[in-house]
Image (cartoon, rainbow, N blue to C red):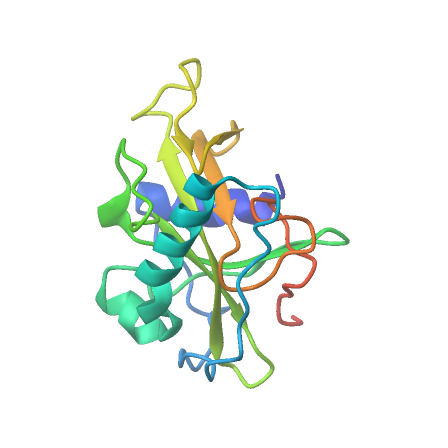
Length: 184
């Protein structure tokens, strides 16, 4: 995993203040683009239903201020990218959701991409459980019919779900080549 990802998620989880200097000046939601459903080919009906539940639950958070009002962090230090594999975007953690449960409608992190106009666009969600709550040597937690992955350097389990921006690498891939971080 790329170092900036480790810093931003680890900082958010342990309560370290995150610098706002790299944060965008405007946090408005991007205009509602015509979004299509992510490709769910090859996934069974349970996974497809969970993806639709996640989209329904996160639809209000296409408005960034609504996500902040619901508990997501407003300021995030940086956008997480891993050229040439793509980016994850800005990770906005809702600490109130960080526990031992994976609840489809309550992802611990919302991921956003910032457009050239400074507006945020919701791209997806990430589920996390810290090792202090679910030990690394235990059976992995599951969501969407799959095991969460290890992030040993972050000391957590995680799973990305790209429900608002198509990911050519796959619905559950870590990096999205269609997502980019602002220059500088």
